[in-house]
Image (cartoon, rainbow, N blue to C red; front, side):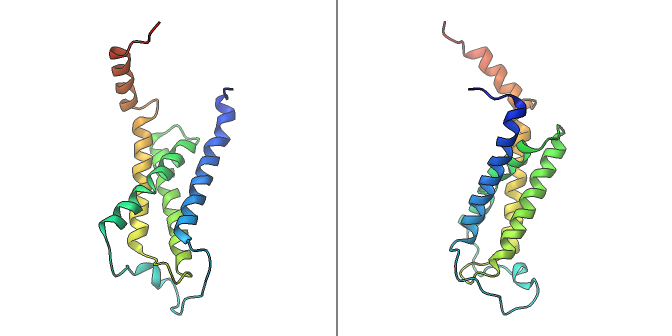
Length: 154
């Protein structure tokens, strides 16, 4: 069964919601032992973890790339800049919310570096969508290569 473009739009938003839920679950796991921090204010989020590893940096960027891609895909705007901004803002807001909630979990470390890396990943995902969308130059180049070198069998 094929869906028209109007019917497919709710599925685009649903994919963003599902992926954001998976990110929230992974970021806030374990989901128990919530406590109010002893420090006052938002100071904990601006600290940084004592250890920063390359795998942390890589993971924080890579897990937000699909979110940025899905956000850019779900946006109604036809403007590539609008899609990139939506991915950037959506990724930043979700990351800030999750990093802020991590303050209440003693087993998790909230970090401004994580926020910056997550935002970078969402931006990369938005840029990736703009690059490979059907109106993009990379898509057109790949399509022309496919048409020139791959012949359908009859």
